[in-house]
Length: 343
Image (tube, rainbow, N blue to C red; front, side, top):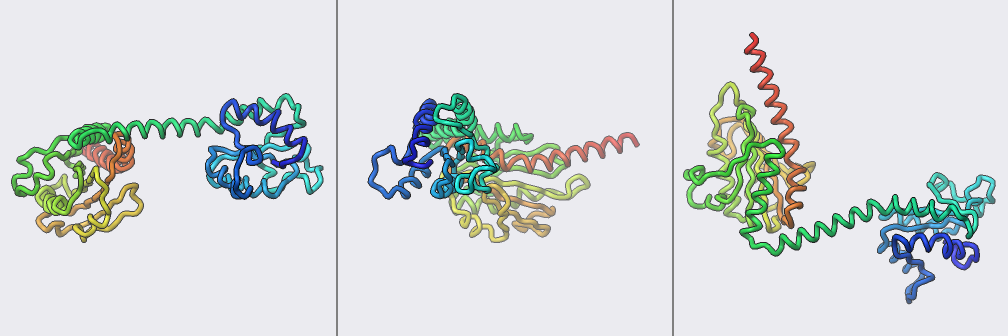
């Protein structure tokens, strides 16, 4: 807004300020005490604000600059004296063409009776998603604080329960791996005894999801995982199983660098389009070499878990694509079986 103009100052005091104070804390640079350069202070206030109101009356170049700066990160509500919006207004007063299409709230004079309600309605509209986001942020902080107070054992148990629930909701048929599943692999595989294994029905579709939840992913963990994939992928060929699509999800409470995965699994290729750090390998000769069936394997890393909702949100992004392909395969297999039955 133009400072020092009696009419604009009056419009702020009588029309804008009372409405803003109902819903927020107004900050105007010439109405606060500071010792900064005024241009620097304005930019600081914009950076700290949730929204900005820019009055375009008298077409101040600084207002246009500051409004454009604000639009980089926050919503901007535009106001202006009504006659400055007219195409008949002099060039030095008329709202510039690049903001002529802005949904500007016009005021006729500092006593305009309709302006406050129009501004109030716009503020409600703009503030609603901001307040909703703030409420979600506060809820997330509460969840993170509650999660941080849990013991490591309780954190792992909570994450296991959540992962099982999310897998079931996405259409997988989960079960916990049993100790005898690992007998062939030796004592090092005890690292995985608290992990989750989930297998999708029908088995003929050849899809599998395995989720491992650990306090941290270490080099011994990754070595065990490398050799664990061999006997579990050693599935006999047959008319119903032509490939194995195995999605292995590694979940770690501690943060893990993607290069740690790549150092152990040199055969993998990074999938940059996946929402979490993820790698794929396609092999018909075996990875490790014991497997006989052609298969595609995906490794996905989810580390630095901070709360229950954090895991739910991140699992929700990676589970549906796998399930969609499985369900499609299942429907096709079912349709084919029905067709054979009719014959």
